[in-house]
Image (cartoon, rainbow over all chains, first blue to last red; front, side, top):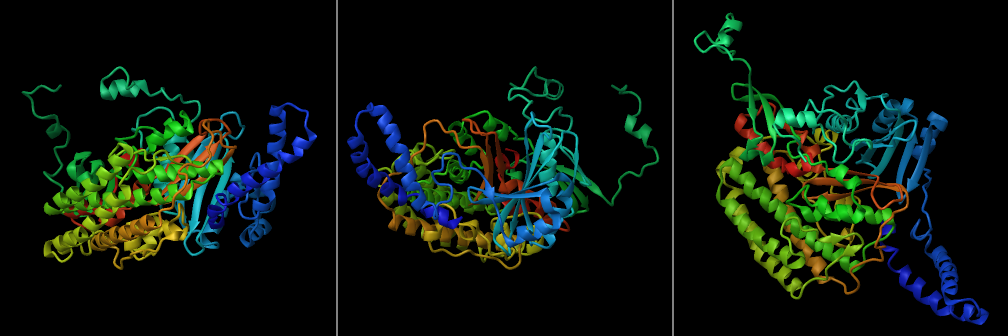
Length: 232
Length: 383
């Protein structure tokens, strides 16, 4: 990650000025075609020529569509040996994450905490994909103080499926899981006190689900408790 | 309604119950209470004056910032983040802009990075000043509030001159800065630093050896390093417990790795140590700003970013060291102009979870001190 910070600025001026100085000579000799298409043709090779030299420094710098690439490390090799194909380690924009089968989540989180020293659970959150069969992505952002390393663990679960709570692993998961429950309606089994945290207790619906419109609200709650027709 | 002429229904229902159960008392504090720094409601379980435990009830300021983010373009959402931690709006903006830049695979030019650091550190000082003034006021020292607000005004004037706003600044843009620094910016910031350096000594003279201050803060609201880490507590609270960890050093963002500064740490993890840590942090911020001003490069202030931003599908988590702790943004892009999901990892929300542990066994009056020392902003807790 640190080497990513400096690189993009120095290569670009070079990459822009040098090839563009050379390039006009080449299509100029070829001539004919209207200017618009020439420019389009010129741009792509020049960018492609500029990209490879800068590649070792800046990983996905100018690739047309950056995609996640596999992530490998001694830790991953060890986890792969233990869990095999249920684990897909990837890296994107210099950040490492692994997609894990939901049945293995409690065990893997425990292993990451106890054996791999990920002692700080930064965040737990969810993303809703209503068109998918397994509608929810649950994401744990983990950090290790001894290793100074940050990773994400991601899993997919279906609507109504339950996940084991990670409060016994990290105490901070208490409020974070309550917020995920409040906003997405995901149940964490074994949570000491799973109830709404930001919205009032009697609220209906889970606002961060995609089918909950931005103007939608629990009108009944607003009418009863605030004594007004609508909060909008 | 019961008939007023008959006996009270309470008496009829519980005739056997003793007049007062002296062992345990449940008391509600807030949400409308000046010492809660916003609208925090705390339900205290007391044994006499001693706190047995407490529960925070939050959400009174919930505005659905994350839902709003999903329904705005990347650019349109930028001003909203200032409304979370509104005393450190510049830091919020920095975290968000850098997260989207990561998603776009662009980087702000060096000059923009320097100006960002200068403004963010000024904002850290302003945030700590506001914390110090109100925290001391809660404990009973009125003077620091006047001193800190007088000096904070100078920072707000610089912000206002730079971008037209004092609190919700919207100072940065995705890809760099919208505004070049105004004429005399460097001179004014330098003047402020010269003005401010002796002022920190002035604050310390009022408090550091003040007997009442020491008695009210030493040993109050203790939390160990292990508990901090288990509870995800970050920022000055974690450092005061002896963990030398600051994201500006651990995983440098912007161009913090170019600057020389120290991370102050405490030993006891009590309210007094947290006070000392923040005082040193203000001095260190002054050092960082000095270096950034001295090395302020010329050049463009905006990277090449498209007018209509459509980051490639993917997700990033980016976090910065906000004045209150680790402030993270988890953004998921589906390739459209609006983020598919924006998650804010607010330091105040996570730190507030430690309140229960820190207050157990303390006196009621100390709860006020501990809420102040946690330095929470309810706009960020509730989002």
